[in-house]
Image 1 (tube, rainbow over the protein chains, first blue to last red):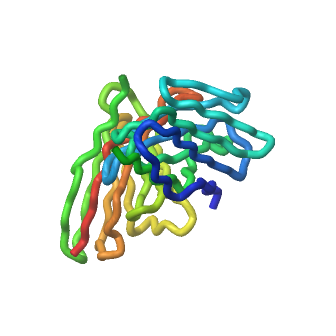
Image 2: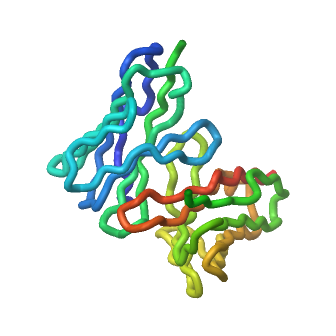
Length: 111
Length: 115
């Protein structure tokens, strides 16, 4: 399986704190994406970073990508209770749109 | 924006019966769609790639005779879980690609419970 690893598996923080999640993958990629999933629901796309990009921002989200280490991080700043969800990274593995998902991080933001 | 509609959102069926899940691209054409399965507290695992007008491509370990995929038109792919068993209970999600290097569009998923 090409599934990547994510850490931590679970993260519990207080509202207002920052949350950092990491993702590692195994193959060369065209891009890496981060998705969010509320319990029992579908996926919400958060951000896409291309292999030639090192950092990308979107609102309170900051994503970094280190292709030499085959790793990425997602930082959520000033977290809110509504950020409570599972977060997954996904890579395309040079296979176009066929995404391989990481194991995910369960984030709980306590108010 | 592009929307993928998945139906039903949940289904409960008895062991031994078959269940069909539909995935439609609402305002765009999709020659390819992807079917994922997600067990509780786990990640999404790709089951198969649905190809319009041709056979689906299954991932290793996925039984093609059990999970029948039909992609008869550019806007509809169906996944039929045949002779369902309790261990098939899972969350099934479809997706369709946008343009190159753009995010996939995901359906809202189908929660299948086999009793």
